[in-house]
Length: 98
Image (cartoon, rainbow, N blue to C red; front, side, top):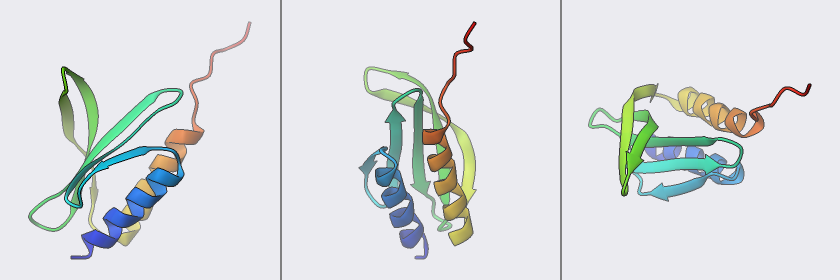
């Protein structure tokens, strides 16, 4: 049941960074649409680790999630994913100036 601590950490860091966090303790989404859209779906699988899927497309409330791009299996993995969330907020799309 260590995943509960990982999930709580990810949710708290996501909220702190301005992400919308929706869902329960086993399946939830973390998304932000400030300068660019970033949305992840996190699922606790039956083996007790957390799979992270990135949003790819969707219409009419039907989201299409890609294959798992991260697999969180320990506390360090949760911390590394939190760093991805922080970096997502701090990395803006930049337009070159002429």
